[in-house]
Length: 216
Image (cartoon, rainbow, N blue to C red):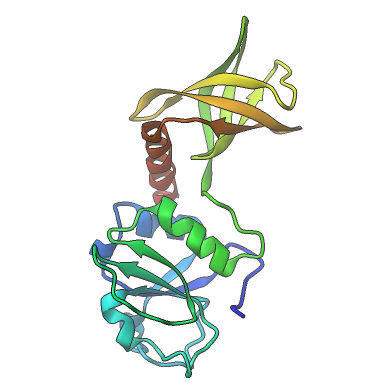
């Protein structure tokens, strides 16, 4: 059974080159609290005594990591090319194509390392927004944002189960619009889950989140 942490801070041994990451992905992992250490820079490329929490491995470098017999517990995420190599290893918890985007890598890291994994990363924001429900409009701010939903703060009351159109201004992308549903209420605001958001909108949000984390 793979070890799992109880927080988002952990050590990831990287056996991949910088070009294997999409722009902002590597820096965004640091913004999320993960310590990504290039294994070759440590001089311990194949040292099973180096106890890391996860190995992020380019499939072309797979032969350089400790064998499954030497280190049976540390989970591995493989970065693959267009034609993935046939590698069998019980430690492999996921495969993702190069260059890897944060939204593709993040859920694999979460499942491998966290006790309560998240599906998508989120960031604190202060984005002007409005939600439209039939003939009602609520003006407020998106104070936390991910590709899957947001935390919306407004003076108007929004009850759980309410469906709406949500619009907010995304820096460098302009106004984005998506359907959303209120899934919980709290003192900090109401939790909205995006439903039926166009792929383009989700990509814009994901790129915004990655950029914000990369500069955190």
